[in-house]
Length: 277
Image (cartoon, rainbow, N blue to C red; front, side):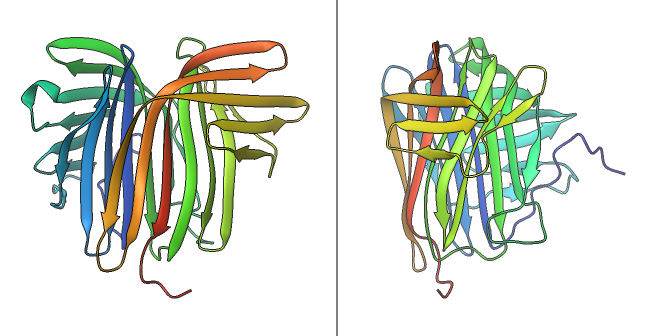
């Protein structure tokens, strides 16, 4: 019998998208993995005063025989060790390698936009633990998202933001997207006690550097200031799209209350697969 608290083994579907990012000591550490039915790519980048890609591979990652998450590739390792998620990136320059050890405070799942019968979207919005980088260990906050589509959309476009305010105590994450012809949007906040607060249905939206949300009488605005940017093209015989991530500062405004913090945004646009319209 497997432990329901631990992350299960990675099981490949026709379209998989897995990402982790971590904030530590005014730095960002990110790894993005994409599998598109016969084509796969994954890469990592960091921001530590400037943005730079530290590892990239066209090779597929492999799940071990473990019943729990345990994948490895030529540039990365991601595994569950007794409920602790370990993410290791082996950078092209060894001094840029990093290792994060985190545990989720909240685990959320819901149906993907194109399905009516599964819960294939995983969000871990407030990962908490430590991160090793260049011989030092830092406290870290982070995020994981895993999306599995059994049938992916032909075209997609989305904007996403995840970050923390209140000295890392309040996690914020939001998306505004179109997958095929399906609209998809949300704005959520996770408090330290595990409480999840969500925007009213259809009451959140994104601009290039601003997120808006309404929760009852509460009107919220989150402004993003870019500090660094990175791109991951996904181009093959069936796909032509780009994933772009940015790291920066955020300013949370709700009435007269103003809070500051840090965040990652991700934008993805383009042709996703050869699925018929």
